[in-house]
Length: 228
Image 1 (tube, rainbow, N blue to C red):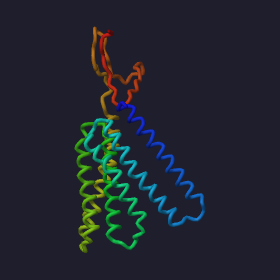
Image 2 (image 1 turned 30 degrees about the horizontal axis):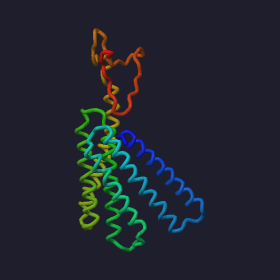
Image 3 (image 1 turned 120 degrees about the horizontal axis):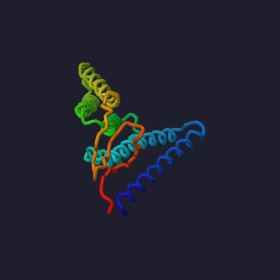
Image 4 (image 1 turned 120 degrees about the vertical axis):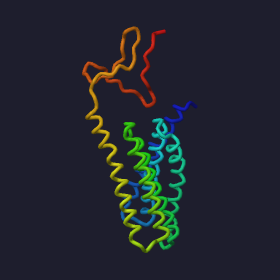
């Protein structure tokens, strides 16, 4: 099986899984009063959607060619994180502090991965790479600090204030990326750019209505060549 067909099979399976999960959730809701089992099912589906979002975003990052190592790592961790979250949901150990902390730690790691991967997907300007790196560092510090505080339970409130400030800065940097990218596009030069030439015929990038709006598939590039 070719890589293209394998990818299509995976995405088709992912779509079918999402549809099945939604149907199970609807059935659980329509059965009437929610039981503990129904609540566990809904929470498990929530964990599936969350870890599935990480896996899908990570594979999209791999397909885009940006930071494929980060994408593969996040995609590989997603099934393990789903298993840990599922165990936490179904363990029935509400009073077990260790399992609760382990489940919360997993949830924080999934959220951090989703923030990092989605911002890498949003990045379209090389000039904003430092902003993305800053966001990644802040998210790592925020997640790591929160997990440390969760397990160590420090009495000093200064630690909590530092963690909260780090989360705020991380969120600020994350939301700044799409805003600054739109600002950059709005202020970009609208002059024509010559991309290539063959026998006096130029391939030009233009903002003029006379141009052809070519929509390339993921991974495709324009090529100027002689007819064989």
